[in-house]
Image 1 (spheres, rainbow, N blue to C red):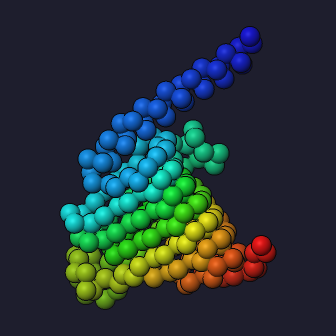
Image 2 (cartoon, rainbow, N blue to C red):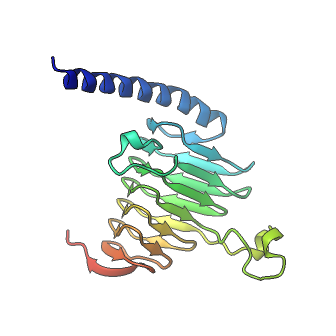
Amino acid sequence: MSANSIYLFIIRVRNAILTRWWNFSGRMLLKTQGVEILGRLSLYNYPIINMKPGSKIVLGDAVALCSDSRFTDLGVCRPVIIRTLRPDAKIKIGADTGLSGVVICAAISIEIGSECLFGADVQIFDTDFHALSPENRRHNNSAECIGSAPVIIEDNVFIGAGSKVMKGVTIGKNSVIGAGSIVSKDIPANSIAVGIPAKVIAALSN
């Protein structure tokens, strides 16, 4: 056996041990934080999860969260981050959806369908985080002053690396969002959209 073959064997064994440990310990950690896990869960290193009291995070069966550049071709700049920002906020991720280094922040609601694919370092948020009014903007944490609206991403959506999905947006099923796009308006089903702001450039054929 060559030195290269031995090296690759060692890497495969190491990766298998790591993923088994992350899946075992990470699942327990997420459950202690209040995350609802509806079946299998694949973790590649630990995500960052923060939940406000009374909020909800639900992960469907076979969701995969990749927080380690060794386990995704493009690499990631950060671990997966999933946060609820207010009581009663909800984040739901459907079955067999994969996320790599994705940030999801919900003040109201973010619903992601099944079989979605989110490239490295995508950001999804349903809030402006800060008030638009200039007076006392930095310290104004009043929910009434901060714009927020639910986000819905339907089944089988592919969002390219580095894209951002803004508050109040619905992305229809099967659609593709090009890398680096900013989605600030609804995208219909079966569409390809790219750019800043993202605009539909083509329809997907069945």
